[in-house]
Length: 349
Image 1 (cartoon, helix red, strand yellow):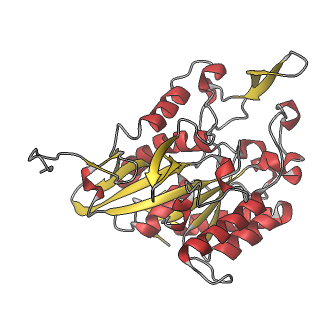
Image 2 (cartoon, one colour):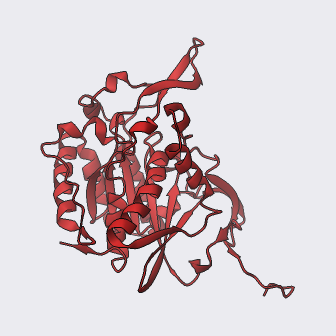
């Protein structure tokens, strides 16, 4: 009952006042943080993941991955519907997540008004199994992971220190060695910042987690870290062997297949982006490498709303809805869930 005697049928965060699912209190909650630089494709990745992960879990493992907070998850739902309901590439463009954009809300935290990202909350359950868990995803602006950001005045990315798992999205378009072997890369627009800051972001993430957890400088965390080399359609042809796709066998995640793919991709990164491997493995003792594509094809270049200094329209890339066929976007999340909720997402060696 509230102070005036009326029944309380909803609960909310005491800081931001946003509504929370009833099972949030007293239940198991796992945060999966998505970390990447600006324009790496985080919003596309998360929109695709929110569609592919529930489908695979139910079809292959009889696990229900359900929207636990439809109102709070509406922004992510809108992104997914925009992408998968589009008829033309121009209809499938998702706005970039920016600081103080619509993916953020102002709230009071320790008597200070700050911008915090919306949590996207889902429930994980299996029929006949009493175990249930909530899974929380965040879509942060890439700028939030830059070293110049003060984590006290802009604490929106502090969830990485409490995360059950972290997905780090590597953008091959920002790596000179990757660009040199990418198919059709010369046809893509180059208006976006192509600075290679992957090692800086990983280093900054390590420093933040050590500060927030009060860890010694040389101590690694055991948090599962999935390093995802995105936009695989443009570079996967350069791998020495095809990426295996038989990830699930008899309703269980096949760890040996994941390990085989990870070993090949780790060696590939050592040859083309060695500092990413070094920084990832200096941060966590539990690292796996994945290849993924949110689109399943090389996105076409189309005119954008940006107007250049010479008065001409800029160009951007957007997926062709008729060719959407995501590739292993759900694999990193499955790997993380198999470790933090093994009763719901079992695995086998």
